[in-house]
Image 1 (cartoon, each protein chain N blue to C red):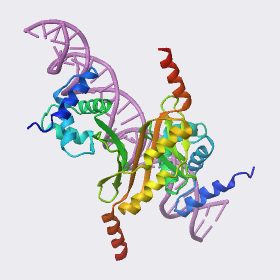
Image 2 (image 1 turned 90 degrees about the vertical axis):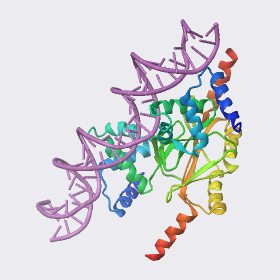
Image 3 (image 1 turned 180 degrees about the horizontal axis):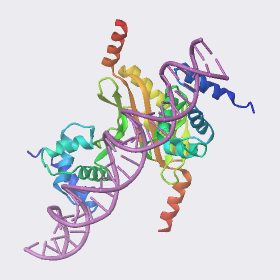
Image 4 (image 1 turned 90 degrees about the horizontal axis):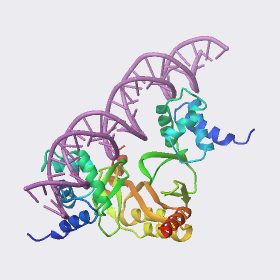
Length: 155
Length: 155
DNA sequence: GGTATTATTGCGACACATTTGCAATAAGGA
DNA sequence: TCCTTATTGCAAATGTGTCGCAATAATACC
């Protein structure tokens, strides 16, 4: 029962610390991101949220996500598949990146030190101040690659 | 006068090789990308193109860019500033990446081997087949960083 | 060079994610 | 409990990019 009060209080204190209010809508969206897997877009979050609150408006989802992003609880990404749709996930270390399979659509997370290294180069070699990095990859996962090879064999 | 017939003929042969036609609109868009700097979005290309052909339609720009991308003459990117807008530039080696300054808006190109290295890791360690990579950085350039520091000193 | 075929264009309408203005509502400090 | 004002729901607006279709024009063929 007292398994996860930390993130909840964290949400409350971060909201209040920035002069914002804790609302049922914000709690709901936050909990959806914590519970229902990751990598959700606004509309999907809206669908899930409406199961608890039928009145909840999509605009509120967007505004809530913007707030959660601003207080650092949520990261907003773009996946290779289509860059016009924003994807949200809980902000969590460790730093990781995403690969989207064009065959089955699955998103594979992986870690690498190389991206941070690029950031370091930008700072050290060019004197730039880096505030944000967007990296994503797309291609075919092992299974889908095999499938393609098989189909080509059939031809 | 006969300074640059190569890319022009290249355009023609690549179009014809793929069963497409050479049209004034396509030549115009291609020349704009070759001449008027790089990193243009569709609307900007349209504005520049209309100075030569007032009838030219934005939809034609999009279709032309898709064709140029398909035959490999143009790369389509996303810059950190906003991922909803497609940016186009001539396809050209060497491989390079982009940093957008949030202060002055300038885009700085740079090279690094680390991104290709990540691609190699994906292939070797995870068995993934990589077809596309999107990488972009944002932050503040040297000048804008200095300016911010100065302003904070004033406070 | 003239003609037929069909890729391409211009145009308007559409699609879709995200944003915004505004009046009504509800957090939360006093 | 009341007051202030941040937040919400709603509808309308934005902004890029796409699509269907009839008119046009580039190319292949004679």
